Image 1 (cartoon, rainbow, N blue to C red):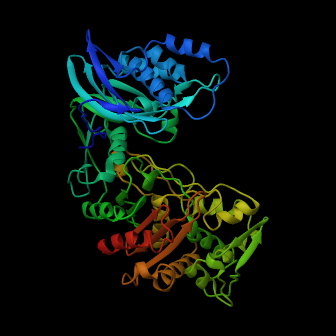
Image 2: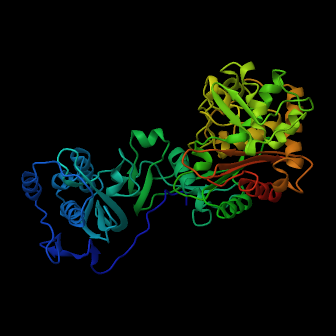
Image 3: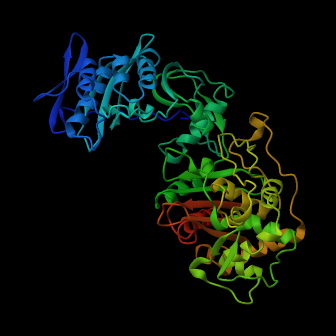
Length: 557
């Protein structure tokens, strides 16, 4: 394998209903065209001009079924007939639409396009596309589903297709384009650490990983490029670290081989564990080396485990605790305040259910995840203290990890006032993903930062990221004590039951605007394994992400 993911071909037979009228494709002189039973719309662009002339005032209000049908049919008919300017003019961004529709024929080499509209749902119209990709004497059929939404033009209120690149193909983001030709990089056969093939059939989460491996190592691995229809990413997608994606392979190249650090047993278990939850992600790694042993996501379209950017909630308190201990602001067994609430920078911060711990130690506050125990120390810290701790000790937030595929390496920006206080408990502007938080637990277990990696640096002589300093022996000892106590007696105890004594954990819940439930986080280590996971909109981390992480630590021995 090692190929970019392919679009599944689909077939639909017979006419379907659009807005209450049956639509059929009429073939004539080798060119397809729409006809609507019982009236409908002509495909000529002149209709729109005439219609606009009849409506001097700007039309407002909800779109009617007729308006949706007319606008959709005008656009789809012109597209099917290869008339890009006319199709573009039927959208609210004629320039962008015309350019991409022109490339559909010229760059993607698609012909014999047949489009079948489905049943409209309000202003949204689904449709299926069947076409032929033809390049240098090689032809293959392509079939896929997409959808469009009709909107009112700002200038005159006339119904137009709201343009986004995804209308042309659902895998396109704005700025991307479709291209058929020699693939930019040869295919690769990706292997697990034992030499077995890694495929999306066996491991569905690895689609984006295999895309990234091909882009990084296709040429280096010694393969030969084939011919394919692919999504070529634009600037915005590249900034989001999205890889080019194969939609259809016309001729196979000769794959090279790249070996990864993934464990087939742990990867299989990780896939099964995340499948039990909606929007779950997890990463397992080896603290002593940095090797990534498993990466899995419930959703397979975006690799949230490696590239996600989410507030980590109270799992961030591992980093914050190391800072407070180093500065003498906290010690594991010394008394530490945990009031119900604490106000800083004009914000009133709360504990879960406004609990308090009277006369408790810092260890008790950490184990129960007391927010105010950390917020109360904000006034004694400089605005950049947490940023420096994350960068210098944990190797985070410097955008320099080189694991072998694209990653987001965490972000701990310098903040002030209430936002700085919120960052101490993993809110504010702090952003992480399971890879980052697995690395945090691994740093505590190993005593120093080892950059995670998926492909050995010896393959391409790349330089791994390093941290500029390590925690003192005293700080490290106390931090391990905090995490071990939490795994044994705190919020992580239920998930980590039976995994001790060489273990440690921290739970987290991160509030997100618009979500009824917080994102549930869990990071832990056991022996020479570290793992972290998140379940978005899951609730408390100990109940949601905890069982996923614990199952992997248990299986890894």
